Length: 171
Image 1 (cartoon, rainbow, N blue to C red):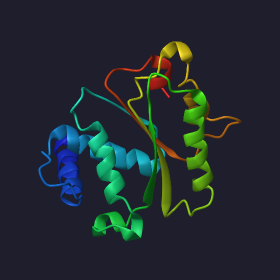
Image 2 (cartoon, rainbow, N blue to C red):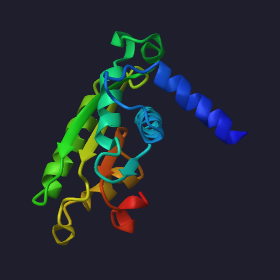
Image 3 (tube, one colour):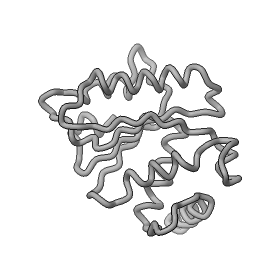
Image 4 (cartoon, rainbow, N blue to C red):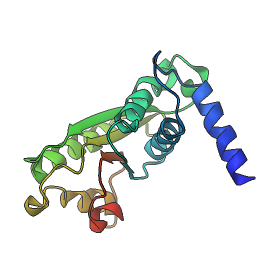
C-alpha cells in the first residue's frame, strides 16, 4: 500500500510540474523532482547519486523553474514557498572558501526574506569532483551539522556521479 500511495503522490506532483517538451518522464526523474522539492522546502540536506544522464541536474533545474512561489505558473507551486537557488559548480580545484561563499550568500539572503514564503537552496553540482586531499568539502560539516548548535537555515542539494565519503554523505 505504501508504494501505491508513493506512486500516486509522484504522479500527482509530475502532473502539476512544468517539464520541457521532449523530456522522458522516468521513475528516476519523478523521484529526483519529488525529493528535491521536499528537501528544498524543509531545509533537509539531500545528496543525489547516479550515473551521468540519470536526471540529477535536470530535476534541480525543473524545481528551480517551477518553484517560484506566488509567481509560479502552476497553482500547485503558487501554494508553496519560492525556492531561490544558489548554484555552485564543483571542479577538481574547488576550495572550501568558494563553497563557504555560496553558503554565506544563501544564508544572508534567507535572513532578509520571509522564511514562510521564500526558501534559499544551495545546489552543488558535481560534488564528487573536488580532490579529497584538498578537503574543500570539509566545510560542509560546518553548514550541514550546524555550528554553535544551529544549522544553516537553507536547503542543500548536491549531485554526484559516485558515492561521496561517509563523513559527507551522512550529514
